[in-house]
Length: 175
Image (tube, rainbow, N blue to C red; front, side, top):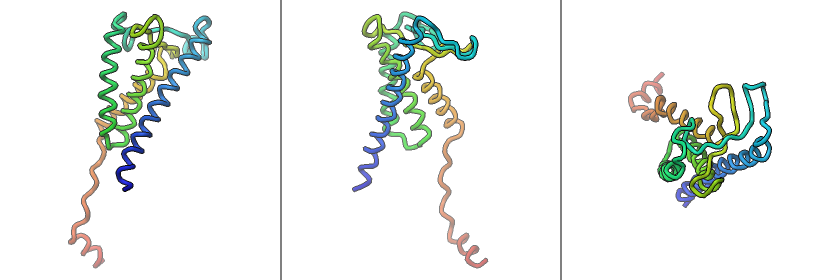
């Protein structure tokens, strides 16, 4: 009877982790909008700054003003990620999928619910580091999740070694 509980417990933990990522993303965006919309905060000169930008496009500000299309695409990606996470047995891949899903839903929330209107909202970005484009918590989760998937693809989990054969156990028993 404990076997059926394991998947539901795992599913609940996945949902909780994704919800925490989305909450952290939305809370930090709300803080950023209230504190740094008018007055950017320099942390380390102009190399690390906190200031608010809104991105109606995709990564690296591409495809500006295609927010409805990007929102639909992100919704499809989120559904695929959720389905993949449900079936995943490898822990590293599952962590990657959770990060990707949480990040996708965090930014998708902006597209749905932020100004100027439903499906036209700009994603709030607020962290600038050096020459890198301005980003947010959701973007960080997506990046880390993607890197984890690449690393897992390059270094797949090892197959469990086969049980020692009877002849191998006989030689160790004699020695």
